[in-house]
Image (cartoon, rainbow, N blue to C red; front, side):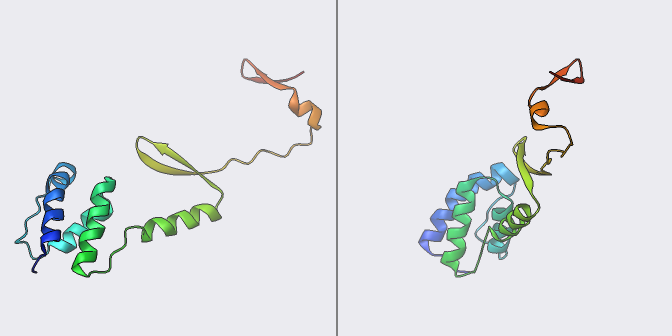
Length: 122
């Protein structure tokens, strides 16, 4: 593939970032450079890398989307009543805990307290 000058400058900006994050080198002589770059762009956590990969793919004329998998996951999350929690840099989805519906009057529920692991009503 023949790269334009804009694509070469963007690839040069990505070289150090991709090597630091994935340990792979970007070589312009590689015939599978754009497909491997697309895979790395989808797996990357760096927003600059993701944005630059999208720009390179658009300059090459290749239809490319990063958010197709994420959007489908977020629509499923909204349907299931799930809470999103960030744990050690990754997003974890957990089911929301609905409050139990008990037969205790509302004024008694407001004065409920915990004492040494036991529920105490005051």
